[in-house]
Length: 150
Image 1: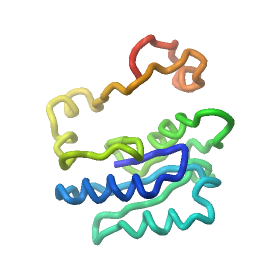
Image 2 (image 1 turned 180 degrees about the vertical axis):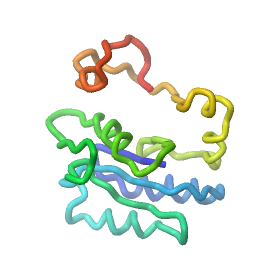
Image 3 (image 1 turned 30 degrees about the vertical axis):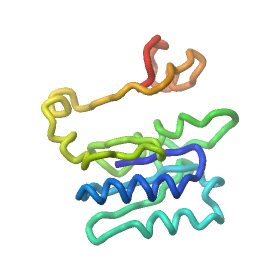
Image 4 (image 1 turned 90 degrees about the vertical axis):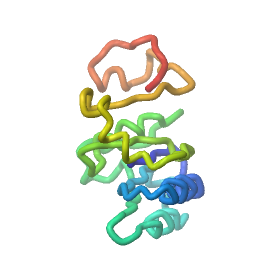
């Protein structure tokens, strides 16, 4: 699982982790943020402290030069952090969530579902549509699509 946030929200991540673990999931977790938003806060250590034997929790930053796709925060909204987290995460199969998402069941079953096995991905709509000026369209090499965000 990957959690991403444009701001440091370690309490949200701790709640999501605690909820997910209470349902028995053993999925590893990566928590993605911008370096300047976690520097000096102690959040990275606190989040990695959520690890359990065989179930790692890693705090990662999108600016890390070891990433395949390194980026900076920039100005304005920082929703592009999700793209960087998806590209750079250490998992072959990914469940991507915002830090304020709290799973209500163990999400492990999703990876074995017929839909995921057939399509290789599953998406849920969000509360808004991606604006045509969003650079994600250019990065992905596709035209803007007028549909709810995935």
